[in-house]
Length: 228
Image 1 (cartoon, rainbow, N blue to C red):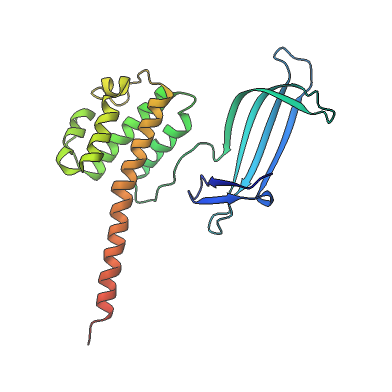
Image 2 (cartoon, rainbow, N blue to C red):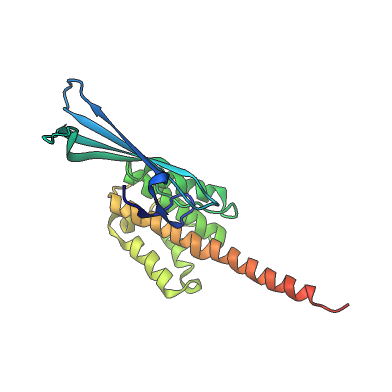
């Protein structure tokens, strides 16, 4: 196999996967059945980042037929499905200083996105409301009203992004309703909501923690230089 560049879903580092860190296999359904010939292709990849070294496992199901090649094998006709088995979904890892309830809602929104975009969007809206109430201490109410309360507290590009998602299709139409109200949402809209949540967690919680750590390091360094 050729080496390829890759973003590890565990540590989020950009790495290069080489042959010794990649393993693939195929299993073909030869038995007579109502759906026809199928081939399941599985692959492992191990992150070369020494601080990670975790593996991923993916599986793809194809419609196939016998190849006319003298070497035999399968001719791949169409990919029917794909699964990320380890990790179980494309999601980012957030530190423990992000409240557990918010992290759990985010995790479940990612896990259910492809199976049920509607349920995923509901969890993302609840996650967004949790962020507003915990980080900004907004006055509880309708989600749309809680969002309005932070308009003068965030930069214009962040506000524009929140507004863009809020106004988008069914998401915008139902931001005013109970966050647990399930609405019709397509996969792209569910993905946008998850992306918004990820951005806000990074720009608010993670950025604040990084700033406190940097300021603390400066204060500690200055204190160590004080003369008796």
